[in-house]
Image (cartoon, rainbow, N blue to C red):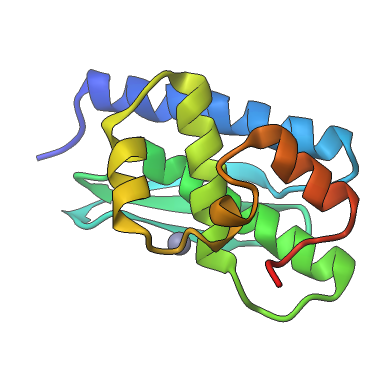
Length: 149
Ligand SMILES: [Zn+2]
């Protein structure tokens, strides 16, 4: 029981991709929380984000966690900063987490998750609002359209 090197490589690959997405958002004025560390928990499950303070958080990764879940959890840190900086209610957290995962997966290369996600139509409010388009998401954020109407 544990993790294979391939799984660990997947986590690193998607994390790098998610960080590139988050750094692009930071460049237009939207901060995110840095990943302080990852805790590996040897029980079945996915992953969970834990905000530590205003600057960082950590992720608990359970056995069988998909690589893309790392990007999702980092997306929660982005949403925490967005809420804090723009005094927003606690809504659309899952939708932002999935949006960050979507763009991270797109950058990392085509993934079956993206196709499944579009078909599933769950927690897709942010992606639907920008029509799954990165430039459109950036435009919406720049205009202050943080949450879908
Ligand atoms: Zn989530």
